[in-house]
Image (tube, rainbow, N blue to C red; front, side):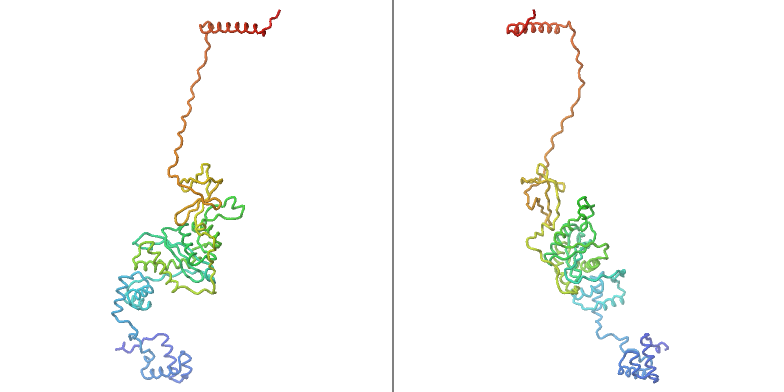
Length: 438
């Protein structure tokens, strides 16, 4: 048949055949042919002899169409693809090959698995094209800058409630730190940063976005304008007290390393926790300790320069009093303080107009005045206010009408008055006080 004489070649093989034909016709030497196709002269002699013997098809490699000696048995292939469809349907080939080896004992290359999936027309997760961004060099030293953010996601899928992953990544090494919380706010940010400090130390700077937790949205007060300062959020204030520089990113792409690690975690970490059947935050935080160690070992990088810019927490500094929410309040005349719709009675007799309430990450609180913790109690029932007085009712005034002169009371009154005057005159005369004029 005519089809049996057809030889399918690539452009690369056609080029090699052209050069070999030139060498056979003695248009060029075998040494020149070897240079043209980047082969050694010994290999050129082998190919030339094969083309003379077999014709043009002698240029084709003998392993074409043959099964590789390293090929996996069909039984292993079928088992791996069945496991993929049953357990790892939404995994990418790379992660799926890792899990097949770790959990099922099947060692298969990720590219081989991808080709198997294509061959059997099995859909799998593909990487999305990334938009072009300008690249920024990493910081040179470990601890020089860390990127921090919170990621809202259904981390437990349908097994538990959605939560937030507070994540950190060192810009120089890519070493991660993370912890799960029920929400993204000031207390979770301070608690996670405190745990980071205890494990790694105080970094030189922190790269954040402009979430209200990390950047204040308040307008400058008159005092701020006079001091040429801007209002600080509670988290900014705490980092300033620790001597940590705060850098705010203008876009998510600016802090791309922490954003990319969240994308990785939303894919890999979710599936890892699914395999471990984790559905609670406490279980997830315990699992993170093991998971992040392996992640840093595998994906971490060596810094450009040796050294660690993390600082140990100085002695005498109480992290609890720095990483907390501080609020100034007026101390009333009855030694009460109103805070968060509750009333507190201060039990110490202090001369103060204002006090500071500190709310700590463990849920407790204290009232301070000049580095002294004041004793207080919660007023659970507010004292009842005195009932308001009834409004005064103005009554019309009665007009006085004098009695007539011939009224018996008037006549009697006049008589008594005349008698009273007569008695007074007699008394004064007897005392010599009344002078008589001749």
